[in-house]
Length: 297
Image (cartoon, rainbow, N blue to C red; front, side, top):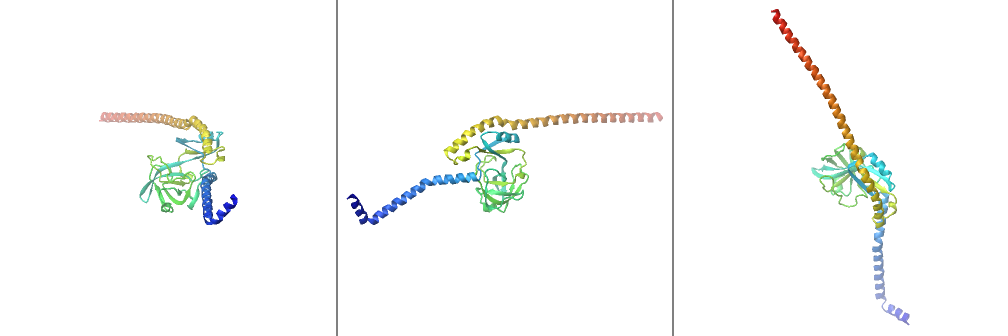
């Protein structure tokens, strides 16, 4: 009886029933979409990061990293891969306006970027621009920028030939620079040959088993945090190595230069004494000559 009454009610109010049914279906579909979107987006970002080899940890040093530091890092059990690189923060001028820019190496094994527009550098005086720059990429591409600040770069003028995007920079805010802690306006990638420093300014680390976890999840953060503690312990023991190496090298140079100075000083004093003796001998000969002349008169 109940079923008959139910079907009769649906039949008599078919349009209303269909409207309610459609509303429920749309609502369920909408909620399913909302609930599945975060998972789909997270998996997509994770796949993008894995494809472009996004680093797990990045190390900085005010003294820099030497080859010995890199070799020791590679020996750490939690480290899967190590990529040492250089970057420089400095001031650049474009069309008489000064900006704060960062220059990084274009040749990379991690944080691999994708070409968005133009082409990659084919010579040492060419650069590609990160698409997150605060200035329009269309204003820069095809034009040149001039380095006006202090920088260990072999060239001061670079032509912008392309635009790239990087998994390491996903925000419009590029972060603070080393130039009086000012915000970065743009980031350029240039050939490695332009960097003249004999040390690395940063090291990117890929950690074991972390690629198995989905990026930005609690599991991933916990996996990185656990290995980060081991790296911090290693860094605490290793951090003074390059500093001590530099101090030792400069002390040796200072000692060698002091020894060279003393040697040259002794040679100079000897030459001065010999010259003085020759001068005294010459003066004596003059006096003797004068005396002989007076005697002959």
